[in-house]
Image (cartoon, rainbow, N blue to C red; front, side, top):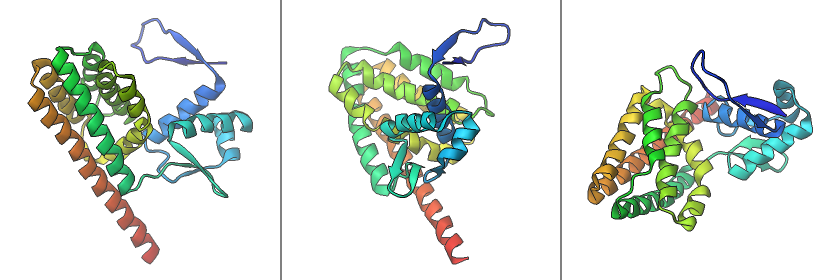
Length: 237
């Protein structure tokens, strides 16, 4: 067993959460993907990564299986394990479902006059992220905000449907990093989304959530096109 320490301030008591070696390895790989250090399509060679992580090869295989189950990794015949690559159709389809689920969850919350505390906390965390923080420090509270909205709708089916695309949403967020100069820009967007829910303005909330997600699709499409352009240039050269 290994122990993972939560982030804390100097001088504060550190509380340890005991996790298995498999989970600890899966967490490290997940962070490498979310930080962009393992780009989509990157191959994870078993011997190399087992040595880098200081674990047995069978433990590494078990860790990759966790991320395969989440959709972050894929096992391809004769190519081993790779970071999942999303194409334009994948992105559009993911965000089509995401938009439907999130706007419906927002409608339910406003109709019932509820604002989840976990969504407020996530926005506070986003607002506190320093400019030099790793991108995962933005991705994690961002995801917690949207997940809080989904779960607060108290619909098991909406939650299950959202869970089915959550890993793909996280992968998409890796590509959004170049479109934000500072984490505060992400925080500002989510502060605006939360304010519409707090105010109970259903029309404005629907408009803001749709715009927020549509802009993400546009930025992701631009990032994908730029990446394909670089790949084509490399082939020509």
